[in-house]
Image 1 (cartoon, one colour):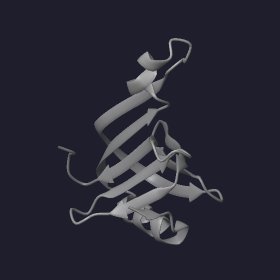
Image 2: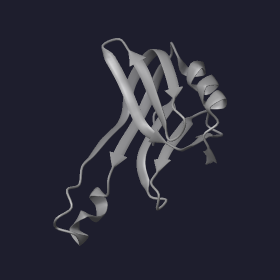
Image 3: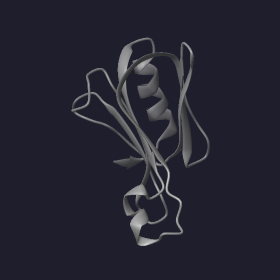
Amino acid sequence: MESVDIKKVQEIINHFAGKDVYIYLETTNGAYASHHNQQFFSAGAYIRNALVRYELGKITGNGPFRVGLKIDLGWVYAEGITHYEFDEFGRLLMAGHDYNGKLAVALEISETPFE
């Protein structure tokens, strides 16, 4: 993955606008390791292969970045994006890594379901 180039990512987000796409969205603040500290409150969210069509997508901020996708009845939103990749399968993969390099958020967009 590369560090976010806001202009390139916006172009790719625009490419998917108005199409039926599959969304993968995950956030975590350490839920997988919360057993190491009983006082740590862990939280996260996960959705995979949600079929949506967004009319407008936007990446904003100075880094880490925010990405919002305007769908018919609301928004899909991810904050903390630091890296991206447009892979060989035509998928936009975006991730946000914390200061220790651990995954904090992922938002991915594809015209085909994620396996």
